[in-house]
Length: 78
Image (cartoon, rainbow, N blue to C red):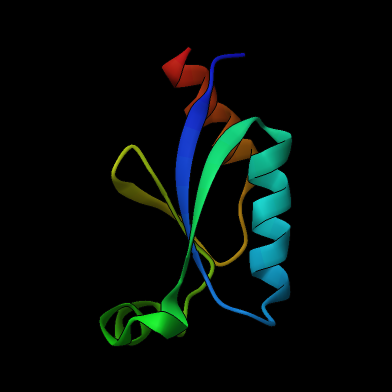
Protein backbone atom coordinates (compact mmCIF):
# COMPACT_ATOMS: atom_id res chain seq x y z
CA UNK A 1 0.00 0.00 0.00
CA UNK A 2 1.36 3.44 -0.85
CA UNK A 3 1.74 6.06 1.85
CA UNK A 4 -1.08 8.52 2.36
CA UNK A 5 -1.05 11.65 4.49
CA UNK A 6 -3.79 13.30 6.49
CA UNK A 7 -4.26 16.24 8.80
CA UNK A 8 -6.28 15.42 11.90
CA UNK A 9 -7.79 18.44 13.66
CA UNK A 10 -8.48 17.41 17.24
CA UNK A 11 -8.11 18.36 20.89
CA UNK A 12 -7.39 16.67 24.20
CA UNK A 13 -10.05 14.51 25.85
CA UNK A 14 -11.75 13.66 22.55
CA UNK A 15 -12.51 9.93 22.23
CA UNK A 16 -13.63 10.31 18.59
CA UNK A 17 -10.32 12.02 17.82
CA UNK A 18 -8.42 9.11 19.35
CA UNK A 19 -10.52 6.67 17.33
CA UNK A 20 -9.94 8.65 14.12
CA UNK A 21 -6.17 8.59 14.74
CA UNK A 22 -6.23 4.82 15.24
CA UNK A 23 -8.24 4.25 12.04
CA UNK A 24 -5.97 6.48 9.95
CA UNK A 25 -2.92 4.76 11.42
CA UNK A 26 -4.41 1.33 10.68
CA UNK A 27 -4.75 2.32 7.00
CA UNK A 28 -1.11 3.46 6.85
CA UNK A 29 -1.61 7.21 6.87
CA UNK A 30 1.13 9.62 7.82
CA UNK A 31 -0.82 11.79 10.28
CA UNK A 32 -0.24 15.42 11.21
CA UNK A 33 -2.27 16.19 14.33
CA UNK A 34 -3.29 19.77 15.00
CA UNK A 35 -4.75 20.69 18.40
CA UNK A 36 -7.50 23.21 17.63
CA UNK A 37 -7.46 24.51 21.21
CA UNK A 38 -4.10 26.16 20.43
CA UNK A 39 -5.55 28.27 17.59
CA UNK A 40 -8.62 30.47 18.17
CA UNK A 41 -9.49 30.55 14.45
CA UNK A 42 -9.47 26.74 14.19
CA UNK A 43 -11.36 26.48 17.47
CA UNK A 44 -14.12 28.74 16.12
CA UNK A 45 -14.22 26.81 12.85
CA UNK A 46 -14.09 23.21 14.11
CA UNK A 47 -15.04 23.17 17.81
CA UNK A 48 -18.42 21.49 17.32
CA UNK A 49 -17.39 18.97 14.64
CA UNK A 50 -14.06 17.42 15.66
CA UNK A 51 -12.37 15.32 14.68
CA UNK A 52 -11.95 16.86 11.25
CA UNK A 53 -9.85 14.90 8.77
CA UNK A 54 -8.26 16.59 5.78
CA UNK A 55 -6.89 14.43 2.96
CA UNK A 56 -5.44 15.86 -0.27
CA UNK A 57 -6.14 19.38 0.97
CA UNK A 58 -9.87 18.74 1.36
CA UNK A 59 -11.92 18.07 4.47
CA UNK A 60 -13.10 14.50 3.96
CA UNK A 61 -14.60 13.65 7.35
CA UNK A 62 -16.11 15.50 10.31
CA UNK A 63 -16.88 13.56 13.46
CA UNK A 64 -16.82 9.80 13.10
CA UNK A 65 -14.86 8.36 10.15
CA UNK A 66 -16.89 6.24 7.75
CA UNK A 67 -14.47 3.41 6.95
CA UNK A 68 -16.41 2.39 3.82
CA UNK A 69 -15.95 5.88 2.38
CA UNK A 70 -12.31 5.92 3.51
CA UNK A 71 -11.59 2.64 1.70
CA UNK A 72 -13.38 3.97 -1.40
CA UNK A 73 -11.24 7.11 -1.29
CA UNK A 74 -8.07 5.05 -0.93
CA UNK A 75 -9.13 2.77 -3.78
CA UNK A 76 -9.63 5.74 -6.09
CA UNK A 77 -6.06 6.90 -5.40
CA UNK A 78 -4.37 3.55 -6.08
